[in-house]
Length: 191
Image (tube, rainbow, N blue to C red; front, top):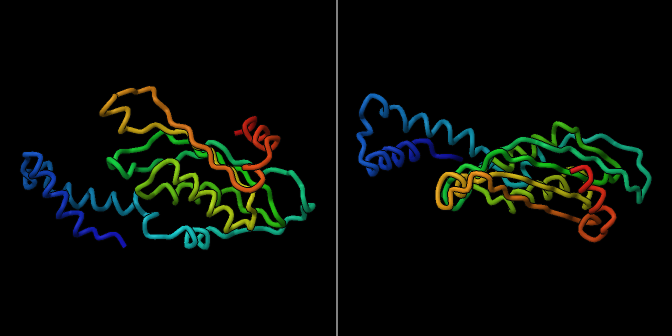
């Protein structure tokens, strides 16, 4: 669990290290506010991928033919996360998820909830795609999952190179998506 008292103490120390007075009027409640914010934006750190899968494991039996190429795609799921290298915001992130059902389908809103909860961790964009794919496989029983993510990283846009137009794209392909070029082309057309 997230230790809010330790966060408060460390934020006070950071404020002092920056040369400001953590007890001045505008800052005295900042450590508490930051600790409260961290419990929200890092909520996913409290759970493993398996626990997130259990949390959102709402599926429906689907009468699909074995070997079917029917796709379920949910795209443009808005999430944000924090880069583990700089604790910098990863923003304007759009996650798209595709899978081939294997006898059951997941409630569509659960796909967005999975993406959101997996993003609420100190993350790398590449790992986020892998986490979402793993959770989707656990819930749906399908090994055929694709995750595409587009995002901006404030560690590139607000500091360092300061390139405000830079975007990062990552693709995670599992199962048939990894092996079959025709499926890759299909998802690129809709994701």
